[in-house]
View 1 (tube, rainbow, N blue to C red):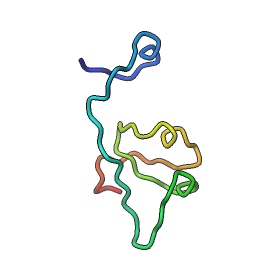
View 2: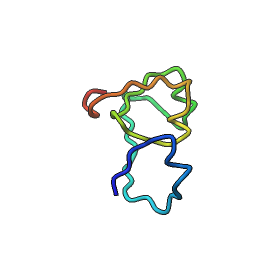
View 3: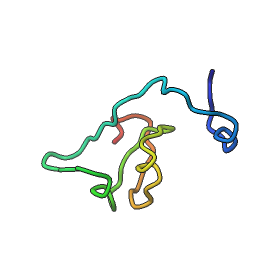
View 4: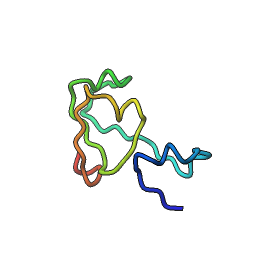
Length: 74
């Protein structure tokens, strides 16, 4: 089944299983140390267009997220 995000989906369905998961990739300058979401506050982060990540990351307004087509654009 293909699923597209919409506001009604959570009201009429129950998530059963994750079909596929992919790692979150962090590319940064040498010497950068990121240990948690708060380390990204005030930073600009490239995210692949349409990607959904951790709900805490997605909803954190203190992180400036810029959509890119692929990771080479970061």
